[in-house]
Image 1 (cartoon, rainbow, N blue to C red):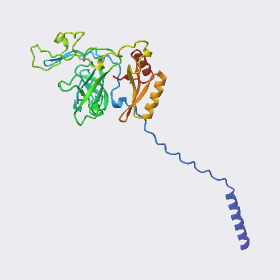
Image 2: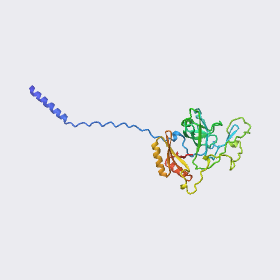
Image 3: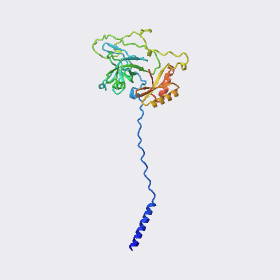
Image 4: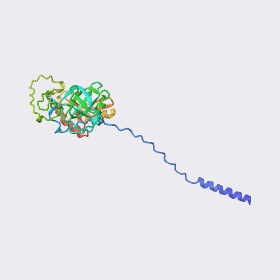
Amino acid sequence: MPMQHNRLLTLSLTLLLAACSSQPEQPTAPPEPPVQVEKTPVIEFPQATGAIPRHEPLSASGNRDYWIGKQKYQVWRDIKHYSEEGSASWLDKGLDGNKTANGDTMDSTLFTAAHRNLPLPSYVRVTNLDNGRETIVRVNDRGPFTPSRLIDLSHAAAHQLGMVDHGSARVRLDLITDTPDQQIEMIPDIPMTDTRPNQGQALIAPAAAAPAKVAPVPAKAAVAPTTAAVKNPPPASKPAAAPASSGKRMQVLASGSKERAESLAASLGTQFGVSHQVEAAGQVYRVLLGPISSAQQTQLLQQVRSQGFEQAFFVP
């Protein structure tokens, strides 16, 4: 009996092992998908490096001639081209929340500025002549009223220009306008005597409250025109025959990716049949089209903006 029992046990184990070996293999778990590392998106820079020029109606309240004490300041309402060098300073962030002459609320994180004479609002390219850095600001306030300074900048603009630590910098201002090549005559500030009873007060008043006549500038005024204020001569024949060096260049955008800028410049240059360039300013790459003749500027600007590049503008 014991031997028979052992045989039965051996047979049972053999059958069990055979059954196990005949079971289908269990499928292995699929491998874990690799972790996708998100690439840093390419940042298009106009919002990061300056205000975006766009057409805006002039402010009703910020474009009247005004007085500061005994000094009258005129607003250049019809100015089409302006370039000037001088000293810039920046406004303390503690002024945030105050109202500007344009009616805006002051915000040091925006690219804004104060100028004595430019229409409100205006867009100006500011170049730091000490380090070559530049930005675009929206002029929405009046000042500075210290003769040694040309413009007061927001903290954001001053930071972009690398002048926060120094407090001031030597800069060049270039007005940005959609209007192609128009000649203007610059009328300088004219000091005027305040004959009102409260001469000792420093205030701002509209021109209507203190009318004053300003002699017009003669046709041949003894003012040395800058090269930037001289109108480009019209081409001798058809616009297409104008030399390639005439006209203005259009900035479409500025990008943090050199490859993106070069690809876009080549694509737009081919699409619109104009020359193109990419200019580097630090880690920012500017996409430029042109030069574009005066006869083509308005139409081409509209076409480029209709392609989604609303920030496009002509470089002064």
